[in-house]
Image (cartoon, rainbow, N blue to C red):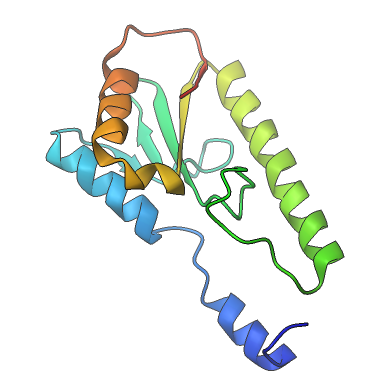
Length: 144
């Protein structure tokens, strides 16, 4: 049972941002401090990647673990309106897969950074540098 009224829940959900989230800003600050320059929210690319390196043909998505169903256990599944949330979050995952595949098919290299990875900043820094500095590929999804 939800402890908020329908109106309160609606107002709270309206505050959830789709871009410039705290995890995204943390990744952007880290990249900037490492000397990387990038563009934001590639409107012409599938899924509008959060961070775009056009010259390197690399993009980074910063995903919230709950919204994109990471499965890491660092979040709680909604307890009210369970059927709605299961359908919505399932569609998010399906859409993510379509966008990732479309980018790879277009020759882009893709990295997904999960919200929970921000707890291990040094590991994330190493992963970002490896992704950005490795030899150009013909479109692939970087795995952890």
